Image 1 (spheres, rainbow, N blue to C red):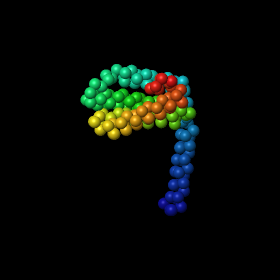
Image 2: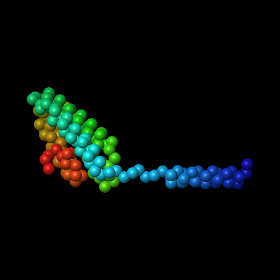
Image 3: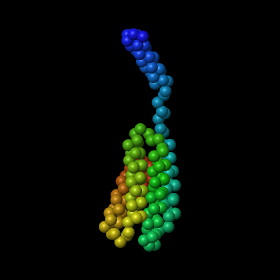
Image 4: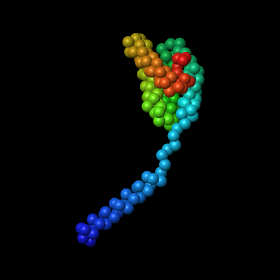
Length: 156
């Protein structure tokens, strides 16, 4: 086959491929919009369940108890972040949703770190407590902004 024939054939295949892609693109519809009320209810339910789990964790009585408590809280927050991450958020809450999930995951990581720091290391222990408090306050602000008060730690 001559190079002109190969070029014509390649152009025909390219045109046909483009036509198929354009048809497929037109046939697929955009994902339906997420209902903001349903999203808020789903995230609130996740937070309520997580809050109940955290409330059931026994308060620590000694250093070993602090480590166990911190690991338990980290586990609850990790599951909460994963459950929240699985939700589809409305477009107008998408950035806040991602920030909420990241904040929750960051809190879980801080609690995990707290579990392995001896309380005798007061400087590092105190710094982690401050980090957790700052993350909690930031998350409370996000929950308020998103109008999902069940996800606040501090009462509104």
